[in-house]
Amino acid sequence: MIRQATAQGRQFTRVRVVSLPLTDYSRFGVYCSQFTNAAGEDIRYLPRDRAVGLPGYDYWLFDSRKLARMHFESDMTFLGAEVITDPAVVVQHCHWRDAAWHRAVRRDDFAAE
Image (cartoon, rainbow, N blue to C red; front, side):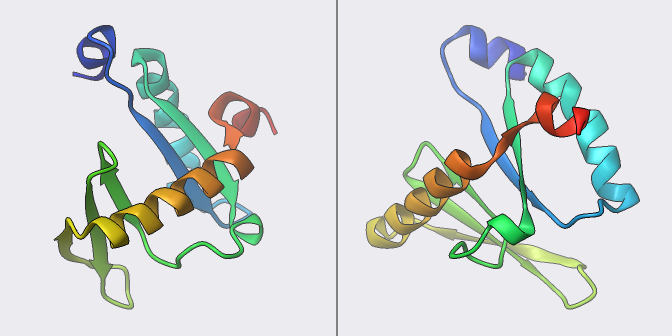
């Protein structure tokens, strides 16, 4: 799906904020991301200590117009996503995405470290 969509000009980008040292789960994510990167996605990694000023929760942006804020229990059980379309809230999250993007390291460089 990623390969086909990027061939049509769509972009898939992602910044993963991670704690160091990486957990087994995060290392698995770095390993798997080589395949989606090869298909056209651009995944970057940002160590948590460089994520100052960014929100402490996970979210996804869709075409910079729709936000899905993820909600988890304290044990990280996924509760669901809250879809937000309020332009002011979405723009703030776009700003955070851009700030994270500029601080993040390309997947291959991060994996090499």
